[in-house]
Image (cartoon, rainbow, N blue to C red; front, side, top):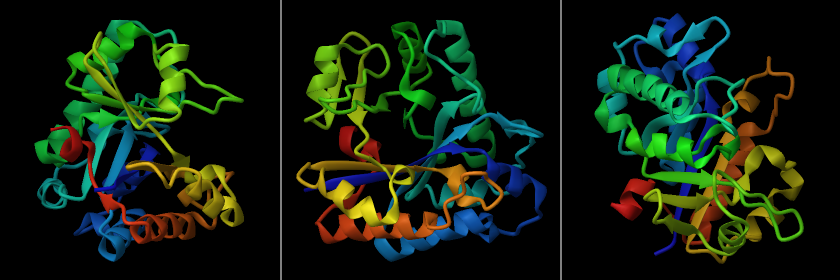
Length: 258
């Protein structure tokens, strides 16, 4: 059975807004309201990869009053570590730095959204770190990491992996790294990288795979962002419709590997 997963990177603005506003439901927030509509229309399961802080806010300020609601929707909406902040770079990080940052985010998710909401499969900001960083993530419970592997013409080597493994991942969905115990997954399409008129051809490039990972970045949703994409919602809906029509079913990685 073909499966797909939809994830969103760089999430933090949504939590600042939830903390600032006295909503009776998290879905009074326009961003989460849209994501709920995607789930209701296509059955999509959505993972938000999140930062600990942004200017003027950090997750410790996130109230617990929505915790029961987060847990009630954890069958289709989950949260995971992404980075400390948008400025974080882990290419040369040490074990302790990575462990500290992951624990900060994990602990806050557990506090305000509950254990059911926390995913241990994620995408690290910029998908680059040494083996020590990968081991730190593993020791914090992380079981799988999504990476970008480029193309044969423009190869990319994420995390601590080798040329050989990256080449393998350009034509395969998963790789189990026995040295670290981490499953590495491939991102297929990042929606914000494409104009609407080019999105179909990009999606079709990977439609023969048994598993499909599609993502976008939160900041492109907001009009105040300097690179705001007014077709953010249209792109997400188009991609989800395409995947469903191609016979893909939504899934979290937990449902595939565990």
